[in-house]
Amino acid sequence: MKALDVLVVEDERSQREMLCGFLRKEGFRVVEAEDGPTALDHLRKNSFDVMILDQKMPGMSGLQVLEEAKKIQPDVDALMVTAFGSVESAVEAMKKGAFDYVTKPIDLEELLLALARIAERRTLIRENEILKERLQEKGIGESQLICKSPKMAEVVNLAGRVASSKASVLLLGESGTGKELLARLIHSLSPRSSKPLVTVNCAALPESLLESELFGHEKGAFTGATQRRVGFFEQADGGTLFLDEVGDLTPTVQVKLLRFLQEGEFQRVGGSAVLRSDVRLISATHRDLKARMQDGSFREDLFYRLNVVTILLPPLRERREDIRPLVEHFMSVYAAENGKPIEGISREAMDLLLRYDYPGNVRELENIIERAVVITRGTIIQTEDLPFGLQSREKPKGTKAPSHMGLKARLEALERELIEEAMAEARSNQSKAASLLGLSERMLRYKLKKYGLKASENPSRPPT
Image 1 (spheres, rainbow, N blue to C red):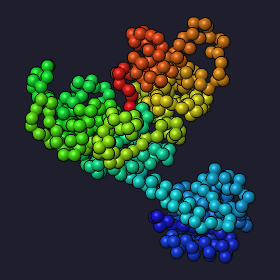
Image 2 (cartoon, rainbow, N blue to C red; image 1 turned 180 degrees about the vertical axis):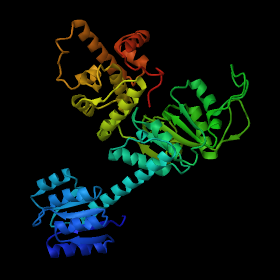
Image 3 (spheres, helix red, strand yellow; image 1 turned 135 degrees about the horizontal axis):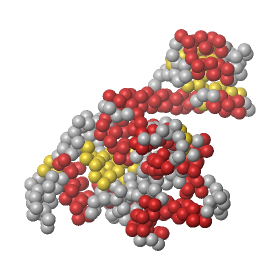
Image 4 (spheres, helix red, strand yellow; image 1 turned 120 degrees about the vertical axis):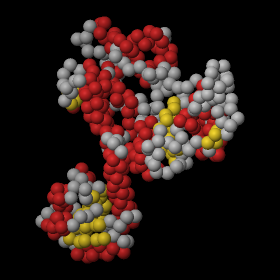
């Protein structure tokens, strides 16, 4: 654990000396204060990582000291010490900026654990600040790195740490969580950033073409191969190859990919020459690869070659702190793109967005905001600018569309909601969604266009 600079604020001399002596033996740098004014004077003169603060003191209370301390050093972490039975007051202190609290008599092991959590958090914050500086130096804006939530901050931090290595990285997470964006960040921060980043969606390529696209082919290798083709592995030489939806690789391609990862060698389809390429591999999938290994559709040895480092991206519903900054970012982007003077979003609309679970994750949120920017009549996005399906999830079961709507409008609203639900369930696969709705694909495409719903770029491609 990093040696922290600790300010102990305790009016009882024996308790203060015991606590300071223990912390010094544990390697912390400690300064002590017997009351609030003395503590604030120390804060004005020196920088501290942590303040261990007794809640009940004569003169200034611990809560008053905390409020003033945050004005002097906003980033200082405070541990509130409270008597047993006064936990409610400690919780109130946490609302005002305290990191955590411990109860009297102080359990020293519990105190060390709390300090360890603070040290880990401060290290993470500092590393992410350095990471943002590196990204800015490379011309990558902070808007591409929206991670206010602790979970996403840890993900980005880990990506920054593995970027400089040659290790293969496996990105796991639901569709729409941002796996491709994270792959681009890893490449941008790596020593290979000046070389190509080649992105391949394995699920979007027909099985018959996938091997040829990845490894290339020789002239005459198959019908239609009128000339030699350089594959993605050769195109990415010196750089990074991002294999999206790697869980959809065919057995034949899995064997060739495994050989490349083991030996650094491959052959073009129809060729005999052994080729080499210096490629760093990043792969991603929303599928359960361990389940696929059990049913024999994915090679176990390939799995362990791909996931030297595994990064799991949390779904948006597990990092709701990111929703508001993402909304603000997408509003800014699409307002500029569409030339609309959007000034903000109403509190009611934001509340709806904060409560929604986003089965399509960040991609779904982006689609919702783009649509809202396009259709809103004013400068503030309102609840009526959000998809009807999203609004209806907030209503009790059986609630009808507003009675002031005509029958035709109510029918269309219901139809649009059902189409949105089908597209979400089918993960934007139009063929599957059309089947769920009992429509032809042509009719579904017409209705998607009619209601201004964003269709998948490739109906057969499951979104990442």
